[in-house]
Length: 381
Ligand code: CP3
Image 1 (cartoon, rainbow, N blue to C red):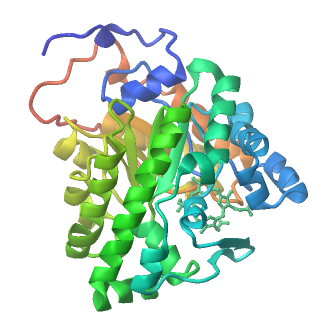
Image 2 (image 1 turned 135 degrees about the vertical axis):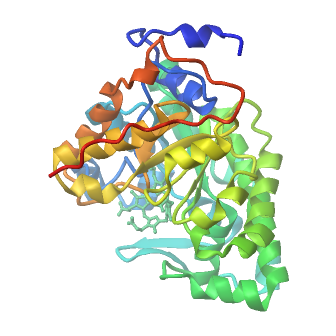
C-alpha cells in the first residue's frame, strides 16, 4: 500500500488530541491512542458533585455556561483527549414532546409513549429552537478549547431512546418496550423512525456547532435478539446515519452486551464501533478492520480496583488492536464510586502506552483484512 504522510509519524511527534482522535477514527497510524471515558463528566468528580449541590441536573444541562463548565471538569483534572458535551440522551425526548424528570432513581418520562396516536403526536423538533442550549454549550467549549481538543456531540440511538419513552423509566430488560415490539411492531417502527429523523437533525445541529465527532448511545441494543435488531433497530440506525449525512465527521456507535449483533452493527454506517469488555477487539479488527475503527473496552468496574489492575486492563485492550484504529475508552460509563486516582491512572496508562506497532517502524497495513497476532502476557499471580 502506498505510504501516506501520516504513516511516517514518529512516536515522539507532537500531535494534537483532535488530530489523534480523527486519525484513530479513520484508522490511520497514530503515535499514541486517544483516550476518554464515557460519562467522564459526572459524580465521581468532587467538583461535579459540588456544582450539583447548587443546580439540578436539568438546570446544568440546559444552561450552556454550566454544561460547558461541567464538560471541562474531566479535561482539567485528567487531561482526556476528547471532551463530550454535558447533556443526556433524554434531552431530545423532552423536545419531541415527552417531558422528563430526573430523580434519584434515574430519569422518568411522565407520560410513557405506548400508542400509535402518541407516537404521531411526537415532533421532529427544530434543534436550533428547542435544544439550542446544546449547540451553545458546544460553541462555548470550542471557544475555550480551541482547535486542538475535539468536542464530541451525542444522542441516544433509536431503540435505546425508545426503551425509555415506552417504559417510562429505567427497568431491567425494558419489558414494555419489548412488548410493544411483539404486540404492535408497526407502532414501534413508527416510533423508531421518528426518533431517527429527530435525532439526525439534533446531531446535525451539534456538528454545525462544532462537534468533531458524534456518538450514538445504543446502551440497550443487546436486549434485542439478532433478528429483532436487524428488523427494527438496524434500519432505524441506518436511516438516522443516512439522514445525518455527517460527511467526514465520524459517527461512533456505542452498544453493550451485543456480541450477537456485530454483523448488523457493522452495517449501520457508523465509522467507529464502541464496544464493551465482552467483545474481543482483535477478533473485531480481523473481521471489520479495514473499514471500521473501534472504541473501548475496559470494564468500568476495573477502575474500582487497584492502579495495577487498571494499567493491566489498558495494556490488554491496546494489545488487542496494536493501537491501530482504536480510541481507548471504557466499555460503559464510569461509575460514580470510582476513585479519581484510578480514572487518572486509566487516562495516563492509555496516553503513555507506546506499543511496538505505534512506532514509525511499524509495517503499513496490508490490503487484506488485518490479522494481528497478540503476544500473550504472563498471567498475574
Ligand atoms: O459522558 C458524559 O460525561 C456526558 C454526559 C452524559 C450523561 N448521560 C450525563 C448524566 C451522557 C453521554 C449520558 C448518556 C446516557 N444517559 C445514557 C447512555 C450511556 C449509558 O450510560 O448507558 C443513558 C442510558 C442515559 C439515561 C440516564 N441519565 C440514566 C439512566 C440516568 C440515571 C442513572 C445515573 O447514572 O444516574 C441519567 C442521569 C445522568 N446523566 C447523570 C449524568 C451525569 C447523573 C445525574 C446526576 O448528576 O445526578
